Length: 423
Image 1 (cartoon, one colour):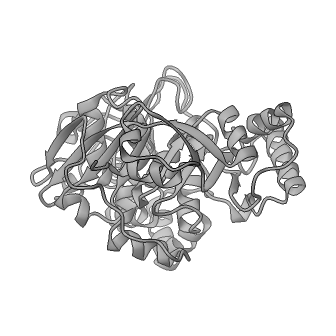
Image 2 (cartoon, rainbow, N blue to C red; image 1 turned 135 degrees about the vertical axis):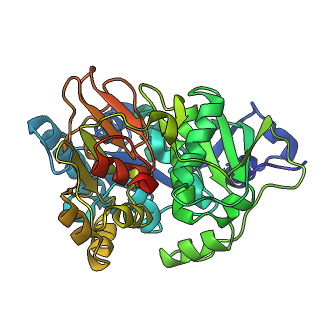
């Protein structure tokens, strides 16, 4: 039986050997996990559940990652108490991969960067955007804190084998169009629940040409279509990325020819225009030309979706020699300390500061309405983040638009939603 990427990775991790036929969509399999992740919001719940279960120790102190990224530096007493509790748990359990302060960063950028997740891995996390790691060929999915607690205790979890939707992307990407636009198009086609408990598998010549960072952006937002995972074949680019992150022994991985897909979506990007997701759902996607001229009060460049060095380079190229509009707060949050340092080394930080941007720490910040840029009632933001639900970034009466870093930078300069070519 020919297998999809999701089926192949699940099969490789089953706790007891299974036949290919046992991996039909809908089948339940029990699998070993390579990494279990939680953050400063979800880890406290997982730790509480772990205690309630009566577990005394985690299954492997090297395969748990606890990343303090949502409310750090802590914004108030409540967030400080949450981080304190996780810090104490990490010390008690001798968790090797505990990250806080200057060693932390946005979890879904940090873990691939450090080589803690990679090709062929099976990863569970108490965060919905755990699916990001599919960009480097891992089956990675978000779970509730109780399920993650069980994973911490046992080192395994059960999975329902998902159906897979194939997304084939052809053509050559135009200037100012990238991974963010491909995934916004996909979500626009499927809707926010069109891939519920299904894997999205991306292929095609445009995907092969895309950088690993662009693939991570796409995989990150698979959940915005309801997807269980977003997956990419492991090719030479993936292996080079993994090796640079310090991993050894990874091998190429692809779906079998003739694998069965629930359906296939096909996109030719040759003449594609940058896309914008309009309030209040990621599926409400329109070409930038249809929403240009809408005024904004705030622009966010960063997050686990678009806070990597490639994203900052794109934004800086647009901002260079220009000024952020006086009516706009442009907040830039590099996703990890390493990315911050590289942006500084390349002169990107100076370009952004000269343009009038606010440079913030490696944090999730306002993406989830946490801190570092909350919206007031009636305000409007354009962000490179992944969600624009009502109230996501602050007031229920605010609006959030989603776009790629080039559109975000151009919008910051113009004060209205804009294409860089219009500057």
